[in-house]
Image (cartoon, rainbow, N blue to C red; front, top):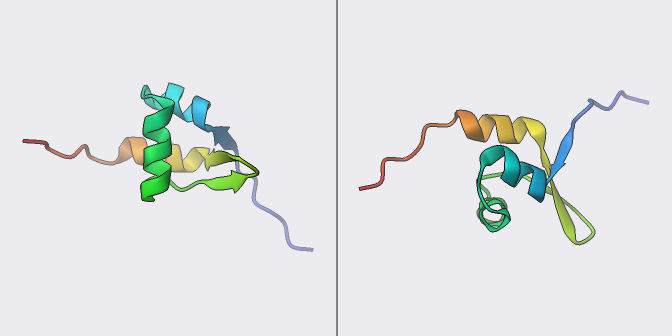
Length: 63
């Protein structure tokens, strides 16, 4: 049986706290595909590595 890599998953609330945004913003990022997530039942889990990558991306210049 192949080894499964250890991946830490975060809840939407944990992601919102780390990114300092609202939970609704995290849901928008997930639904738009900007933040990958896995659905477990009625809730989403986001890989911790995806959050780290999202925080490293340059912020778009608005205006």
